[in-house]
Image (cartoon, rainbow, N blue to C red; front, side, top):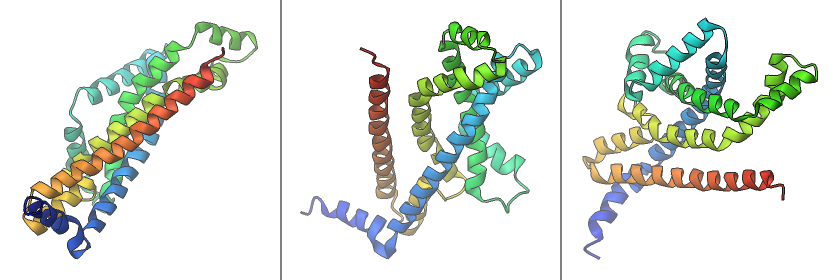
Length: 230
């Protein structure tokens, strides 16, 4: 029992004493909130950027390519710091979690753009030709025929991007203690203990990621089953 006593004391001080578990629950909520909105807005930006990359209009292609290149070529933490301390430095009335949504949406959009672009290119050209032969315009063919198939094909990749975002949002904890890592930092200042708050934070992240990974695996199995025509 003496062997486990320090661990029990650490967990008690981290979670039970003074209802500190509330900090972690609130942190989980903000982490999932930022991740969810970031992947949704990132999907919109990603689709726009992907269509820009595939556009025959050079200016759209150039702008989309520049956006993707810059975002993918710079660290996520640097991007978040620039948004928080430079671009939106004067807008302190904006909640920190919303600044996180903006920063991570722009970051995620660049990666989703390449996912969407790959998904569009994976659709057989005959699908486009069939749509045009039915009298549909290029835009209608893309909206009614190509994009529905593309979104189905890239859905597992989008869920995986959401999982990655959950881990990347820990960057917010370095500038504002609102997420899961921020909760661990708050407990550290109260307990003067770095071990158990961080270990607990890592364990919670692992459980969350594991749950979504299992859900992703089941989703992929269902998609494969629906594609099996035998």
